[in-house]
Amino acid sequence: MRAARIHELGSPDAVTIDTVARPSPAAHELLVSVEAAAVNFPDTLMIAGRYQTTTPLPFVPGHECAGVVTAVGADVTGFFPGDRVAALAPGAFAEYVVVPESSAIPVPAGVTSAEAAATWVCHLTAYHALRSIAQVRSGDLVLVLGAGGGIGLAAVELAVALGATVIAAASTIDKLDAARARGARYVVDYAGGDVREGIRAAVGPGALQVVVDPVGGPWAEPALRELAWGGTYVTLGYASGEIPSIPLNLVLLKGAVIKGLEIRTFAQHDPESAARDRAEFTELWSAGRIRPHIHARYPLDDTAAAMTAVASRQSVGKTVIEVISSEPRRAEEDS
Image 1 (cartoon, rainbow, N blue to C red):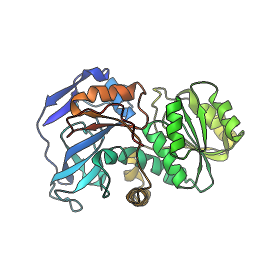
Image 2: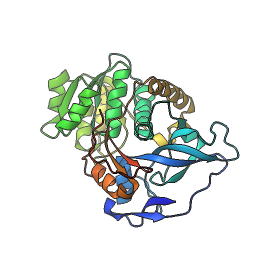
Image 3: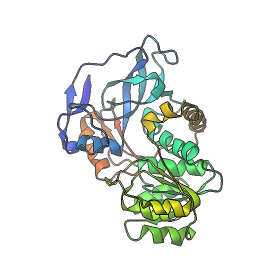
Image 4: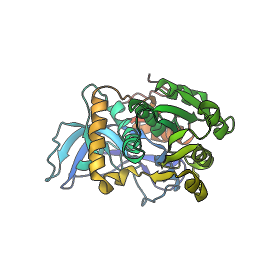
């Protein structure tokens, strides 16, 4: 099979398209013929050697895909060859990938593979963060940092679906416009000024019940300072490349709660909440209440260009690699 691979850590230019052996599923795994895979910012950090964990070289990047089951392991009971699935699995930028049965979900009717690949990881991460970690309730005021990225835009959409009022913070007008289109009531452009003052100007001082933060960096502490007493701050990742240091006295004075979420291990640590969230999320997805914003699509041969677009923060929402497509469609804006 053909696969994008990284042989030495560095920029996306180091990605090559290689011919490698097709994997075989173990007892609890599916073999999926990949039709589309989504590029997430952590993928770019992994190939640069800047992620929290390291992967032995060479490796196939990518963790989010959708396609058709072509074979199942001996102990798989919930899927059959021919089923369409979305999945979280390492090595997604390839024509085939093996997927743990527990990491796959059926794709609702009417959802394309590109849409499914662009939905599963970011939207489910955002839903876990809002529903189980922050326990968002109708009427809560929720700040989403990095609101133009994949997880951020998903968090905006899902927080609105849960009845929250959303203030979206991002670095460009295009990203803020996308957040508005997904239901954000207030927006803050943190590239052009003081993010804390922007939050206060929009909703007043100390008004936030929840902060959802997939970016970290210099925006974390100002956002924490604008939590209401007893508010919850959820850290999801550090797309800024900077892991912030938080003064613990702020947590004490505000009675605040800071929680983290790592999507790959959440179901292991809290299987009941994970199962509930997945069922609720699937219902929203099947009802057509969730639709990703796909910024651009690339063929497998242009994986390096797709990763460059994400690494340079050009992407609004999700960038997708269409593995079975032969025609590149760059900078395609999906409504």
